[in-house]
Amino acid sequence: MSSDFLVSRPHYDSRAVAQGILEKELPVKPEVPQLSSGSATAGYRSAKYTPAEWFSNYHTILQQAGTDCNGGRTIQRESKTLYQDTEAETLDTQADGTRLLGNRLQEIHYWKSELQVHIDRLRVDTESLLALKKRLEKALDATETPYAISTDNLNCRARRLGPDLVRDSVEEELLKEVDLIRSVQALLKRTTAQVVSQIKMNREAKQTLELDWSDKYQAYNFDENSGRYSNMSPDTRHHPSSAAMQDQVSNCTSWTKFTQDNLSKALQEEQTTNSLRLLVERVLQETTEDLTAQCSRVDRAFSQRCVELIEAKTQLEMKLAQVLEQIGVQERNIVALQQAIHKKEAPLRVAQSRLYLRSLRPNMELCRDPPQLSLEGEVRQIDATVASLHQQLSEARGSLSHLEESRITLEKDINCKTHSLFIEREKCMTHRKRYPAISTLSGY
Image 1 (spheres, rainbow, N blue to C red):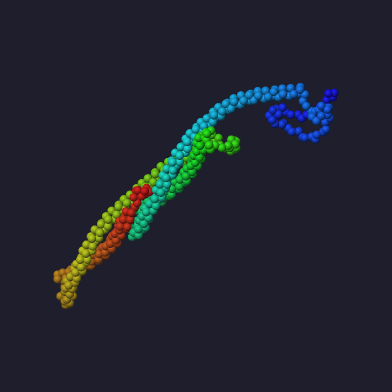
Image 2: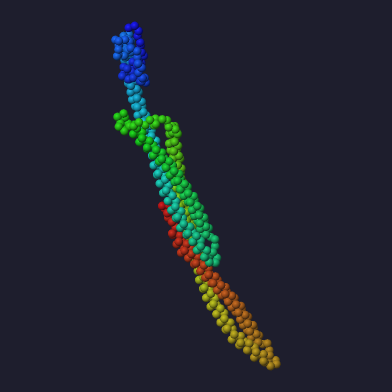
């Protein structure tokens, strides 16, 4: 062949050809009439490989295939080493995660148990405070009876008569009792307010602990379920976004500090509750003792006053009997004096008549003889006796008047004492028998 006309052939990637995939399809160009190389090649494509190209082509393919096989074996060895190493590392990491979850479960269980203990304590403390609050309210209600009794005693004793309306020891003790009851009522009201405030604080602390306990309960269940997951678990899913670090989450230090602060607050409320419970018990005991002691003092004063009234009334009645007796004697004495005066009238008339008749004697017969002197002396004696009898009668009547006044005074005073004794013994002391018992004053 004198001259060869070579035409360009499309380029193929031998690796792609070996894989049966074309790297890139070239755009189809319109066929252009090619020049023929001669009559021997008439009707056949003239663009054929040369032998050198043929040998070069399959040698290239062989080399590329050998290179690819070596690369594949290298990748297989590396892959085997990689998945074996990663398998062990993944299993170790998973075991560490499971172990850490177990440790976390123990830690959550510990703090949850501590929270439960203090929740139970706060519940018990709150119930005890509620019982003390009820006792305080009952004790406060119980003080109304002593207050009503004391004020009623004062009002009753204000109705005493005359000189018996005196500010004695009974009235002073009653006034002290009224002041004591008022101060006790004020103290019980303040203590009740403290108890109500502490109950509120306990409930708030208990609610905080319950919320923390509830969160830890849920976290414990989540971690427990997480710890039960394994590679064979059928309910595991892909959650790619859960592996990202979340913002505004607590760390271990703040997590522990949060629970410790809650427990510290609860412990503080428990200590305050214990102190307040002791205070309430002491207040109830002391107020009961004070009211009981003052009641005893008032009762003793009433008893002493009744003894004094009975003694005074007895003495007055004895004196009244004496006065009545003297009045009777004096009345009889007056009658006797009047009769004595009346008896002196006849002798006096006789003596005066004799003197009158003898004064009619004539001349020298009108003589002061012994009969005349005797009659004159008799008249003077009778006049003096009558005068002394009148004087004695006047004194007897004055004495009788004084005795009557004493009788009236004694009777009035006896009536006062009787009235006062009725008030003290029948009104006041009988009413004081309704004084509350010690258990009632203590709020039971």
